[in-house]
Image (cartoon, rainbow, N blue to C red; front, top):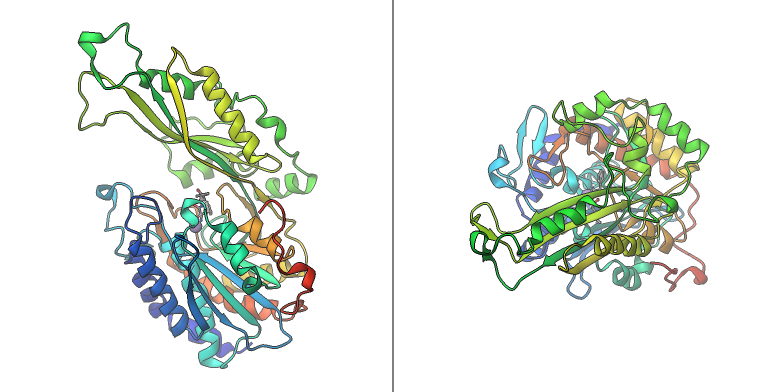
Length: 477
Ligand code: BES
Ligand code: MN
């Protein structure tokens, strides 16, 4: 590889930050209730970035009423392998705007970090690869392998059109290796390859006891309070140590292999690390025993993401007619998503007191993902990251979910899925003041340049795939 390519990337770092800032300006929140026109505008901006980086046949892919995906390719390296680069351009809502130290959709640099919604999760994913591709094309005029890039628009809402997308485009997506740039690093400056993701079983719960709110002085006593009912139901899901009590949850969990256990131990993660990174209050206990990485990556966890009945503003002396919450369980191998969801619902119904009505809505279920993370593609990626970061690459798990990974890898006939990214533990994704460590952003660009070079010497199985693998959606997608 030409040193000139690396130098070009170094001397254009300010421009790449500018590219990222321009994407962050567009509030591409994919959640229902937010104007979808911004996700369209964001798709157009991403398409513009891909075009100006030298990708060809750039187009916006639409399926039914899904938020748009963006595609671009550079397929001029015959006989060389094809990479499929994945990131997403939709983002989470800003949350409480008053808690942001600078406006969420105006990327601002402070102390080596770029603050703004989507800087790290995951607009940097598209910008990193666009930057690496531009650097190659501007210096040597070509890439060392073939590249396809797909930037999703609905990841943060659980990729509801994933199945339709893969049905429509599985041919177009064929590649030898997938690189997904949407996960994090073990610590700032430590390059990491993620080899597992948790899945998800989540839903909305509404508990109802009356037709309308009633004066708490006039009716309070005999009247059932749905907030108390829902609280009891939620509380019944865990014991005093925070462990789930839902029958049939832990019995599904796959035993840790000796290699996994060794890998977790080798990282030497401590309670001190956890407290520092998550910035929890000093007296708040840590649940689930000593093995924190096991709890974070390889055991299920329950969280109640939002809970609502009346509001601070309307708080009056009433007994509410209903209470609502959204909650979910992060799943690990071999938990069956549908079965876990049914167990959760059953436990909630069983604990519902006083004859309240219980309604479930917006159910979501997707499995965990676990890769061997061995073989030449992973080794090549580890070498590339090591060169880009100047530090040894570590293999880590991830407690979060990316529904795309499993089904996508299947459609590619089991092609290796390599998960990397520039999110460090201080990124604060999904929360206020999300930020990207700029040093890691630049190192990720250098790594991507090394990555294409390293992977270019792998054997190319594609694009001529056997017919049997084409036009076939594997079961369970
Ligand atoms: N980038 C995250 C996944 C992630 C989480 C990476 C934590 C590294 C650390 C991704 O965008 C995400 O947040 N996914 C959702 C998926 C859900 C909507 C099914 C998640 O995990 O909540
Ligand atoms: Mn993400």
